[in-house]
Image (cartoon, rainbow, N blue to C red; front, side):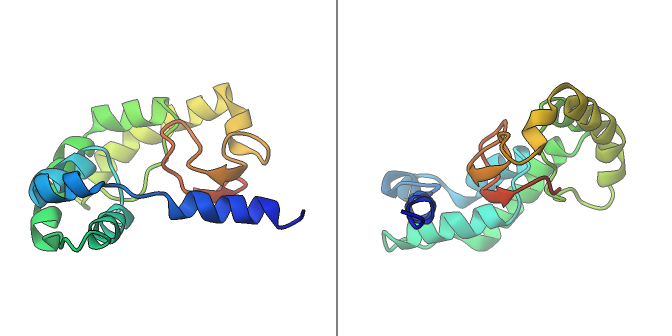
Length: 149
């Protein structure tokens, strides 16, 4: 009985493919990277895409993805978006280039801390970010315990 939570967790993690076979065949890596950058995903997302497409024998163009991601980060890493991301309680993954990060963080942190004041249960064990897979406002935090940044 004590193994059941771990078996459930393992099965959930195994089914976390970011792309299906059709998407791997039809989406170009540049636009995929642009979309992921625009949403502020870290490079872990590229690894998931490579893994998902690899299951179908399809290779993702890493350089094209990274070029698109850099383009997408230009729109993600604005001060205005920093505020929006913070207001939704989303965690910043440290993805902004050095020249854009200060402006993003200047608006992100006050909005994020305000969100934490309004929804403290999201950040403590047993809350939405306590223990789980894919929890939190955007469902993209993977597995985690407790509060962490």
